[in-house]
Length: 189
Image (cartoon, rainbow, N blue to C red; front, top):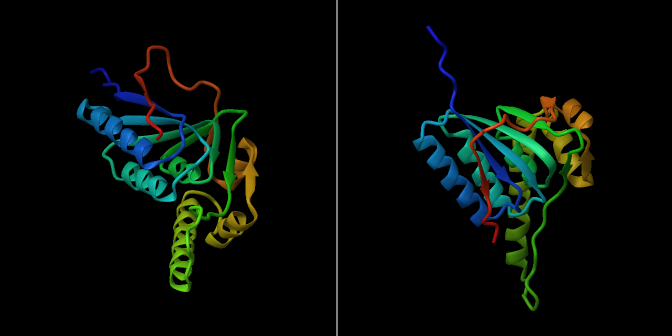
């Protein structure tokens, strides 16, 4: 009896994490699943982006009926680390890096702030920090307190440091095999 091969697919995500780029990622993943793909590797290099979009992508990938592998091909910064954590197996290129740091919000010029609005924003930021810290902690060797400390001070991890941190399982050069099914997320508005 011959062993059947697992149907694999690769998706490049070399864009900021926005609602639009995550919607395109979800669309591509759904299409792959409909075509019987059992293993999806996300080749990731992102400067980060919107916290809510990154958490949505993480939750979506954690809930699909396929193996998810993530591969840092360059830089995985900010909320990109949360998306990277969705991988059951997590790889990185030898010259890649990870950035873990705190979060904030952008103000619109001329926007007025009152006490209630600021209190809501602060509570929202605390909630997002805790959520991000819990995701990273549960997918690494670091405690929740250690991850929160790293978010407050900001840390950049080399591949070797990321292995010690527990984010990366293995450093690899080869991204995929010849003739692999590769699709890219291109919509990043």
